Length: 149
Image (cartoon, rainbow, N blue to C red; front, top):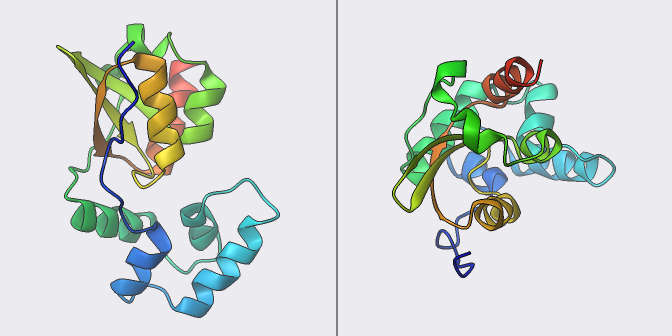
């Protein structure tokens, strides 16, 4: 397995990016962070549940800030052989799907590309360099439901 390396340079957290683009207020971020302390939910999920942002706003913001392509996932997009190497729980916890392996690189669809823990876990699982594309939480979860039904 390859040595674990920092996958991306330090990137701003989702909440900071959303504030920077004036999509949410600092007060909304603080409220969401307070809720997050007592749940296992991601900030983006909490902000959407509160109705403060839409999935499209989160995806647009992340894609613009991080210069990542946005992709709509379907069952044919997923590399089923790669997905069998990862427990369903892990893919759901970190909201990702393995899409394709090319040479020494695996392309992963993630709902939150700022999640450094997720990127480290993914790289440990596959032992390869990862390339990230952005997909919505909803799209990833629906694809996981189809993949594991």
